[in-house]
Image (cartoon, rainbow, N blue to C red; front, side, top):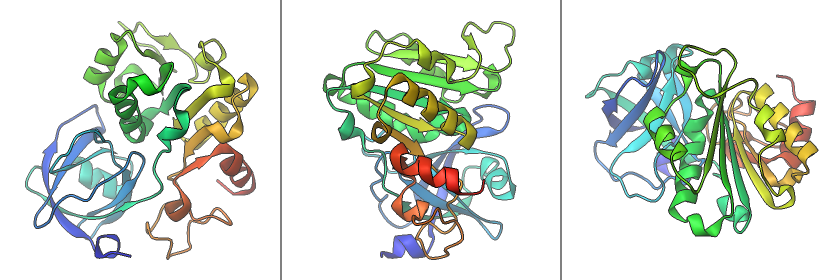
Length: 276
């Protein structure tokens, strides 16, 4: 295990622009070393001084070589709030990369379905970008997004650009509509019933609140998508990142070490047995 996994490396905040009321893309540059390579779906443990640290998925474009890390942070607790409001020039600690990452190659020659709830697009953005960079490898590329209200979507300029593409389908849905909203109204699982997909060869990548993940997986199973082709992201159980603390087990697995990306054939049974 490398030093990057055990001791925080100092990074300086180079960008922190408001995405919506409580969410911001966070750009971090190392002070004294090169940025380690992150694969789509991997995460870092990001520390805000003495307040503590949290797991943040990488949201960078995997096809580009950059001198910074890209994460997206939503203010929901003291650590994420401190990071959300960290100004350029502030120094934070970073450990990682951790996790197995998304297994995008398994989707080759089939349909790619990306389902994101709320901030879940942060972990799934690299999947979309990787699929677009090698669009010829996949048949359909479908992105389904869900949020409580239109103002909660992230990466809105990018979503608008993706919606204009002819080689992918983007469906956005909200629980509560607002003036000017032209997308769907309803739960994120509802479009899954009518979207044109070949279930047997569809690979789904799902990230969002745990109830949404469960309902999405169940909807896809009813459509005929095999459980092993439904890939979900379980980050609520990540504490130390290195499988040492033993506090966030999904017996017999450690999500920070064996995940956080798991197929539903594995994750479904674990979540049924584990307390929320």
